[in-house]
Every structure is written in structure tokens, then in C-alpha cells.
Image (tube, rainbow, N blue to C red):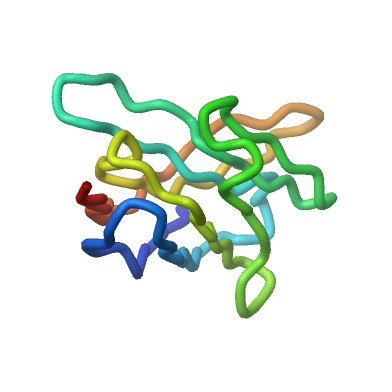
Length: 120
């Protein structure tokens, strides 16, 4: 079992920046990836960015060039630096861990979510 806890988020004006943090605990030796999803009202929950344990990153097209996913303070932590925020970035942001099982990995535990609101 792996648990994740997010922090950060809040209200910011368009064009501003916010930083989200996430820490995983428990059976962290099996972590293969950590990532951020977001869900706006009426929308599905979509992947925003992910960080693999080998350092590779992936981003949704909508956030490329504006958001940066990186390791935070410690091995089982991940941060999401969000710059040049837009109103359409408003959503609940969730941290999630991917766990290794043999030669493959799968997305597993979710955090509780943190609200990000961007005002115009």
C-alpha cells in the first residue's frame, strides 16, 4: 500500500504561478512513477504531467511549456510548478503513484486532491 498526500493549491490570478507538492509513503520501493491529474467540474480526470523514477517526464499538450514536474524534497516526492496559469487550468489536482509489478507498471493510489482556482 502506498499513500499520497498533496499540498499547495489555492486561488491565483491569470498569468500567475502556483506550486503543488505531493509526498508518498508506505511501500514506496515499488514506485515507478508519480504524476498529476486534474478534473474540472463536468469533465473527466486527465493526466497533466508525470515523472518516471528514471527522470523521464511527460506533459499534456495543454500545459507544455508552462508546467514543470520534478522531484521535490526527498525521493518519494513530486512537485508541479505551474506558471502562466490560465482560467482553464482551474480544477481539482490529484497526485497519483504508479507501481511496478515485474516488468510493467500501473497507476495506483490517488491523493485527496487540492483545488486550484485561476481568476480572470
